[in-house]
Image 1: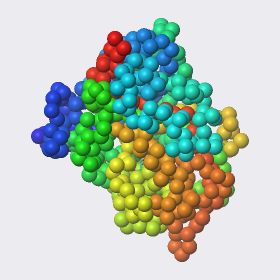
Image 2: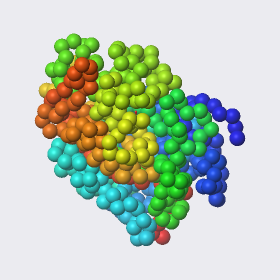
Image 3: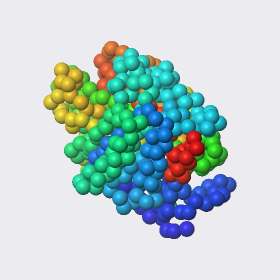
Image 4: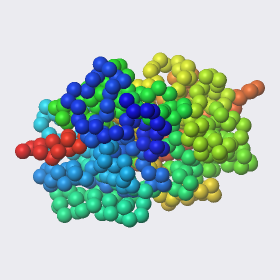
Length: 472
Ligand code: HEM
């Protein structure tokens, strides 16, 4: 085995070398697991570039023959985790259940997909607690009626490579009258790589088993590859159930794609209503997330921001909650601690490792601006195309939405919900533990409103070829 090395920042921690497809991966010897990088889509294992720009093309298949032709054309263009190491632009693809059905997959294959995926994200609104302003009836037209059958994601660092790759993706469907372009959703990083609320994002990522690179400090033990890619052992020691036949499921994964519209003005107004000084507002902003906007975690910088720490990826995620069991530094109910409680004591028992996810959030629209007020939210377009990648993305998202985002019980917080992405009633509360007395912030609102989404399957490259040949 090669010597361990530090991961380049743009790679999620996995084995870097490409490998011919082994016929019988040695499931019984986890330390020998080698990911079949030639078969796995690049976006699963590669971070988007930093800074980044890109397009999500949402497509509807009106004619199955054209659908299969589209997949056939795209197959050689989809980047694998092996071949995109030096590329600055690449294309990935996700297909919904309705799309797979139209493409003519055999009934036995269709039936082998999990029920939530077959139902689609809109149909699972109750399980996802996507109600009220987040209900599918309020979604953007492109996401209405389960009609986004194919989602092509073009990621790039910009420049000429970006133009070329985007044009290449576009060429593959523009002459096919049986394919309708529902939306070409542009995204791109904002100045200083801040998300629409002004925070540095994309810091904490799980380490994935199969790596020969040193995990970053604080990443913890690598999570079994099978939690993220089908066909490898998961945390239970067994591979997760995968779509059949094997060639369809193996090396594929699932993607939960969600469009959030960020109400920055409402968020700014809220901070202004809670503190009269910029420093006071920044502290509240940090308490709501668990990090200062610079990325510095409150565990390591509890009193004041430390931008140097925030920028240092070898230090900015190197912490646990062992010294902060009651949330005096990082409130138990803040976004980051809910989404990954690490070693926090949770009152509803669960194995935190089985709820980890690969995140690929992409910001769109106007950048963060502290002067914006709520009156501008109606006209200003800004937000996040959130991408959650996991071998059971639907299950993970539904668990998180129900138990950790829109529920406070697991931290003994009663009705409190995630202050950043929770669905809120008027005047919801957020508890900031402090000594001698805790603070209760009132008036938390739905600051990020859901505008659409879909569950997508990200097939392996051999599976794409197999899908293109379906119906023959
Ligand atoms: C508009 C939507 C969202 C915004 C603005 C946002 C913002 C943030 C920020 C600022 C962080 C801290 C920096 C970092 O560790 O990367 C973070 C962490 C995280 N977020 Fe979000 N987020 C959003 C949606 C979501 C959703 C929908 C999920 C999952 C369902 C999610 C899951 C996570 C996770 C797992 C972490 C890392 C926690 C850790 O490992 O410590 N986020 N988010």
